[in-house]
Length: 267
Image (cartoon, rainbow, N blue to C red; front, side, top):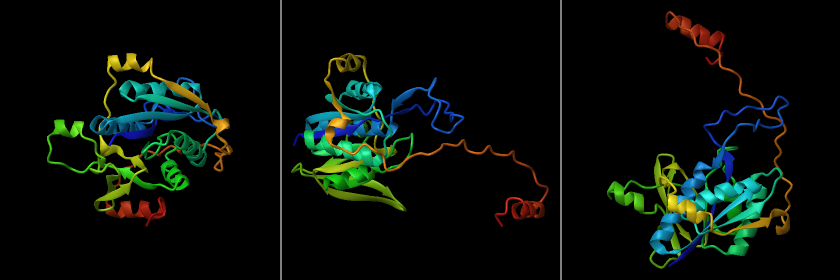
């Protein structure tokens, strides 16, 4: 069965960039900061492409944000996705708003499967996928990872970690839990969020980059989707973490205990 898959590609700060908080605490200093696709979303895009390569179908990449978010959509198109949709929205956004906008997009596109990174590295909230599934009334699986296999490494690189049943109506998802892994059986359509060990995203090839320039990227104004764009969670102030004091050497266990008890107050 061919699958129609909607996958997200959020624009986030490059983790290699030096992040500084504005003096007034209203946000971060964006001058000189590089941006890239959320690493967890890169894994979701890779998994969508593997499912398409095995079963056929279409991969649609969605991003919510300003015009610059098209860059992340183009990155996913260069990897092999078929087309993109930018939900244009310049204002502040929380997981509830993001999920509401994605739900409207799902209503329009009617995919069989929605794949998201389990969280975005800019705010680490890990909520959008869960809220989206609730809004849609779909089954969901979070933190999808890949089970150890006896297949060769070369074969593992080709095979999707999410396994589609023979009738094309169910999906097996392996996820990490405390003490091991568990396998969930989901009826499609469904929402799945992915974790680090599911796969290793491919690099975009030069032909893929050239083809991506010609692929369709549709812009949908967020305000046109009938969603309340006012976030329920508002960041009032950002603070730099306190600087850590230097370590000290102690002469013996007695001195260690004394410092932990009297100074650190952890004993």
